Image (cartoon, rainbow, N blue to C red; front, side, top):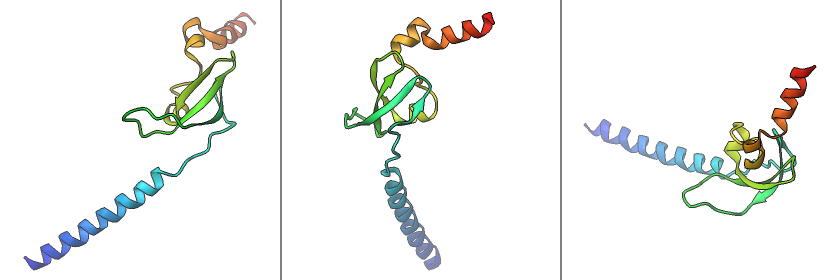
Length: 103
């Protein structure tokens, strides 16, 4: 039984160390400034904090000129690629598809 107690203590120490290292890793900022994601260009890091949101947020400019703040995970996973105005109107992407289809 004493072996089990020792293993449990080692296991708990490993878990604490992994959590600390994971926290350090998650706090590392990936700089997206200047990168493009679809119709969005990342302008700068946004210091705006949303309640309950741990993700970094970025100020972006759409090709149409609108500015918006987008979470980094939404940019990197391709969930947000244009502003809401372009998405509602079909945006530049729809025009491009129509032009390609006409050729």
